[in-house]
Length: 489
Image (cartoon, rainbow, N blue to C red; front, side):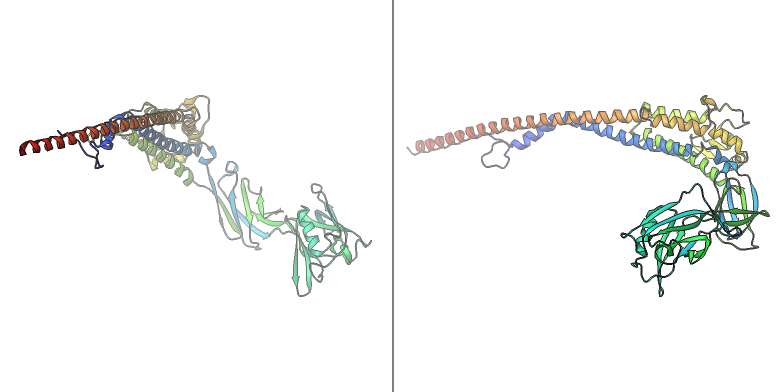
């Protein structure tokens, strides 16, 4: 008698233990497979809600751009001529206008240079250097210190008494000047340049010279520059550039500016003076620029359409393929879409004429729910910037009186906030994934135990079958031998 069994290929094995255990484990793994399927679904939902968050965030950004009332009456500055550029810095104070501007002189910073010394390492002297900024009057030969800029005194001793050491000490003093060394065939010179332009930033440099003479052309005093003194007697550095104001003529009115960045002459506009030319007129035109607000409204409509498309893709159901989107039937997703759509479809309670719905300004809902911009209607609305600004940017504690951009920004902030439905739903999904992963770990531990138990059981059975088979083989051989002996008698 022989026992037949599937062989695993191992010598003497009566049954295929690995195959049997594997088949049994396939059944045992069904709970784990179910958990993994649930986790994959939750992960897909997390990814889907990340797309929703991104689309809502993009819509909010587009809405925020429309919450600034100034954006609806923008003025752009254009310049004809190369004497200056112009930029609108406060649109609320600017009105459409034109200006004729002649740049007669540019503002300059005072520059001074010392006499030539042998090298930058040459010892100059010790004592103190005091720098003061103020205004020098050539007519009265007087220097008036700037009361808002106190004098700066720098100590020069054996550690910094070379030309290079004095340069570094001046630059570290925050005195409103920049020192440098210029070298040519005659030697090294210390140069001092005021950081600010304008006549009120002239320099006065006085010294307390260690050699006892504070005004002569030796020792530390050779770096003195008192504009009211005489050359070689306290006015020992040479002025290489004068501190001067810019002079401009605007619509026939002569004006002065300490800086080449001239603000205040034209309300809400900064002029950047770049080239002086007597008798040459530049034209600064301030005109309304509607391209920006038109682009922002189109961006807003496109952002809503993207959100709508995203939600449709995630929640759809294809009857022919019987395939559903990952958020099909998800009540949170549907609520989010309805909340935003209802906010846009609402009628605004306002006192600003006909602008109460999006369609009133040319942003119209289509049959498929998307928004389409009617350029003609929008251009008409842009022609009434005060009404359009109120329609989008008006603030109010009454939601029905709020501007549409303000309203959408508030809705998006609630949805995206820490306790908003988007964040709450996402947090819940992450918690679900964590819980499922723990259950999967427990299930994997259980499966390892079951697999080991089954392997041990079937290995023991295989051993028993091998013993039985050996006994059977021995009996078969014995009976065969007995039969052979019987037949020979």
